[in-house]
Image (cartoon, rainbow, N blue to C red):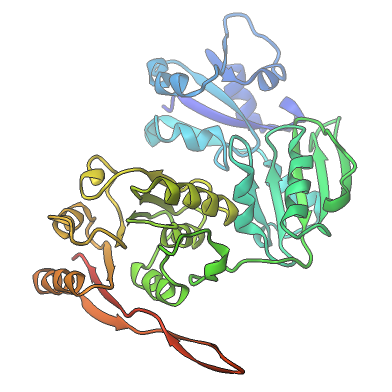
Length: 398
């Protein structure tokens, strides 16, 4: 018998849950939830109640201590969409847990707006930085956003206007599905509501604006840099060799401006990257680049590889953009790489070419030389200006 039951509940309280969910709530020995959720359930003699503490992590780590009791965790809407249910799966065995969802905020908001949910970008700002919205801004996009609190709608509107989407239609849906449900709306660049109800979901219809593609090879001018940047043409080839899949982790060694790590993360919202850079100024620019391009979660580390690689989680892909001449760099990276992982190294010196040539003999893979020329003014005319050739070694670990 499963001892932990996670039950989604909406603003309509117990009236909106299924008979099975109601029975589990009624027969629970321990009821856990936020104050708002617990207030929806009448108190029952002998039933223990626990309000989630802040921070939550300590309580989650001890949840297993209640095994053997009938435990119900109350959650907002669908517990498996940006909810407590997804978090609990990392602490409790699937054999011990049952999830009973309620229509979540995204489903209720899509129904209210008459938007097909499969054509909408669903985003949460609960406990997450506002800058991540940058990943989802493109002409005519529709966004559904879970708010942190009542100030979030005004912050979102200001962010949209700042990013060139001031014409966006913003609709705030408060207390969806409950007796206090209310709707507020306005343009992003003329948002009239300084504060909304803390429990709200934001619907955004974008129109024209300066969208940024998720495909690799963004314009170099989008990045702050001091010259240490993988140029867009080489970057596009490099990302194609790194071949990111959703949810994977990249090590970007000698990250410079962070362009490779940033575009790796932009390829899918669940992708992660650790960028290693020893220069303080470049790390500062990298952080600004990550925020501006919608991936503020980039993990930026100070250090010199390969020593800085110690203790890092195993990567699915590694890019060596600097430091290839360091002793045992290639060996340390190869040993750390997961089976099926991709390793790509770009070099511009003959000494670097010697290292990648030896690496190819040891581990296999491909060697490619990339020569890029750009047209530039020559007086009244234009001529070709060549950039420094880049030798690229790429290999897949079998």
